[in-house]
Image (tube, rainbow, N blue to C red; front, top):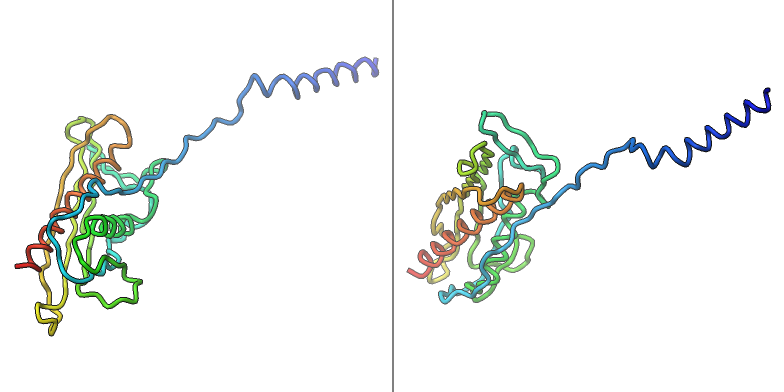
Length: 211
């Protein structure tokens, strides 16, 4: 009797080991984390030129925009940080490198574009401060938008290179509506807003320096 019980026990154990794992999934797979960056929407060279080198200093941002998890406001007034959609770096760093990339590709400055880590002495210095990045996820599709506000300040030597002066300080704001049902609308709309703001800022640099 005892021997028969052991055989039955072993058969049950074998069944549990080989058959149940294929029938019962005790662990659900988690969704992949998607990382988003900013990229230039225009690589064409500018017809307008500025003599000298410009240094782009690392942009600053309020603490609420620090980190890689995207902060979203909902239509009911609540807010949340997304877990499965994240920036590939801190947003202020992404915007800094997007600005460097656009100005470099457009070849506006005869001496090129450098970061603040460069040992070169620039003719111009550009500083940026991100004032706000509002991402509203509304239950009505057409009411969802991204609103980005950035303050830029351009400093540099005047025409005779004798004094270092402030050319301008200006705040640029762009609101871009949601253009897709996918969750990637956040990164796409933010990218559009960032490129539009940089384009406006670049035009002002050309106008102020060459006037």
